[in-house]
Image (cartoon, rainbow, N blue to C red; front, side, top):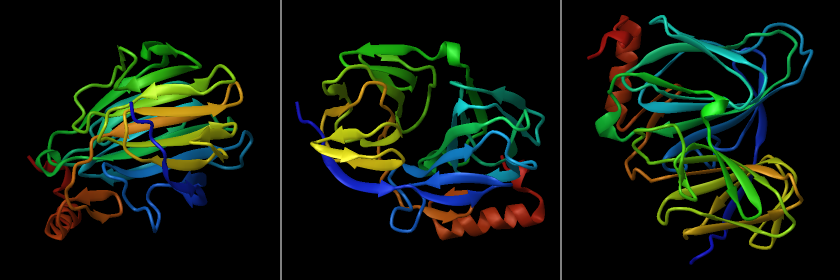
Length: 278
């Protein structure tokens, strides 16, 4: 077994986003625009009693997938095709934007604390123009993996012989919400060759002998295991995926492979044909 070490650390930067939302962003900033196959990681954070309305009003996406995972609060999503749903604490949504979608994500109760994550996952060039789809994953369908020194809620991928409910994703992702249950280090298996990162939710983590505070992205070297220690109930995301290894052409909410494809996407948007592409 080869235990992964820390390759790089990125403290999240707090920035405004959407309509009155504060996010703590790590992937998607200058210096780390992409972490193949991942394009963005935001921790959404809005305290209880925040004034006014907030959320993410209608906006388009093309060429990638968005993952929303809620820790607290409830968000309703809807799109211009009439699809609608709601996710709350412990729920997730894996949305494949594919060739194009216009959607919104808005809180359903005013004054309630909102905390959760949005992750953008790239699509390979051959799949960028596939039909959009949603995978809404309710909390009671997400299995809990019991390992030595940890428990993990497994949204996607395989961990310790169990499989998460999200299926048919090109990069074969692992998305786990992990809580440490003992004082000693926990060892979690991962796929060699896949990009792996951790992101602290609660408590200080110790990885390869280095203490790392929460809201820090931990990018790991290659290997087949991850060893993490910390106080009991320390909590973190562990996310992995197979690198795509293709160029990334990015313009706001559109992610394609070439500049020409981005220009074609902007033409579709400006001509009103964005949602009619076959």
